[in-house]
Length: 58
Image (cartoon, rainbow, N blue to C red; front, side, top):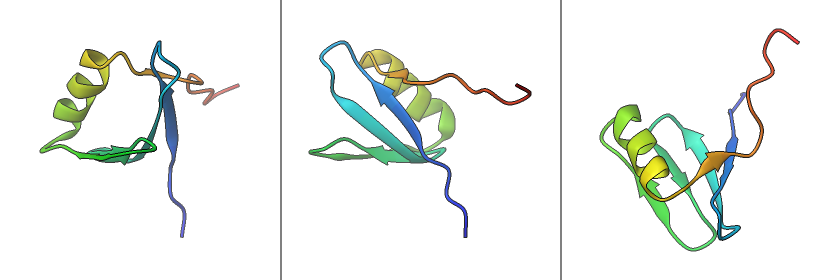
C-alpha cells in the first residue's frame, strides 16, 4: 500500500501533514474537509504552504 504524504508549514513553524485530498493533521489537531477545495482554502487561510514543491518530471 502506498500513501502520499504532503507536508506544509506556516509562518509560525507549525507543520501540517496532509494524508489525503480532504484530511490531515498538525501535532495537536486533525482537519477533515468536505472536499479538496475546502481543505486547500483552509490551508491558505491558516498560512500553510507546501514545504517542498512537486518535483515530478525532474
